[in-house]
Image (cartoon, rainbow, N blue to C red; front, side, top):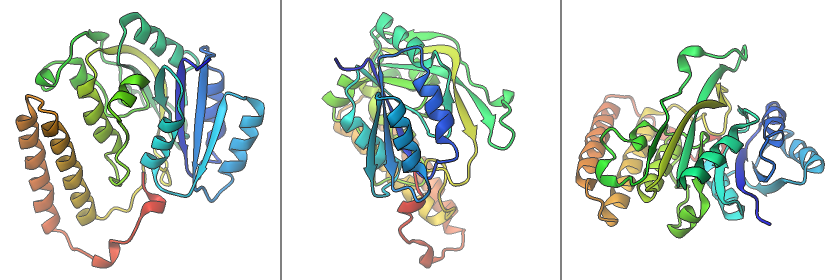
Length: 292
């Protein structure tokens, strides 16, 4: 029987962190889960750590690929997923034992396409919670969301850009062939995914419980590390915004024009700013080994 929830964990050089993450996932009170770990060409002991965990818990499914970035790794996990709902976890974070049970319970009760919880943030160096970064908006449910009201006071507007605090109905993702944009790197992967997924989701639920623990910040993280090259980052941001605008326009969503205006305005600002920065053409090499 397929599991209720598939949890996708992209892994790149996380041997020092993965034990804590997988300990929290395997101890979930919701037992009907599968944990799909994708080794994205790690050069440390990550793969051996994953093999050890798989030997301990047969709900862990391992995939191994050459380094291609967090989006490609997550897409491989989505292709392998069998759950009714799909969630994502970063390998250097951890989850409350009740996280996926509570998210699934809320999703089933409200027949939600997407459900999100709140989150804590903790220091990478001290492991202490950073109270000022805690995120917990009020409970909210939207039964008939549409792109027309996404820039108003809606659940969609309150939802965080990150994918790790959410469950997505897998049938919705498959029906619309929704995947991460593998060519857009150096940040923005989660936001791009959100802006292509949520307009297809009409039933959105937010629960305020802080059930995910996000690490701030590990320099060599797969999803949080990229060379700080102002020009290439601006170009990438421009490509990302145009991709989202084209996606919305192709589907005839009512406020695509408004979204395009916001996107193009931001892109113009970034490009103008980049023109003022020194540009080293030799820096435009392939950074796929260090990106998310």
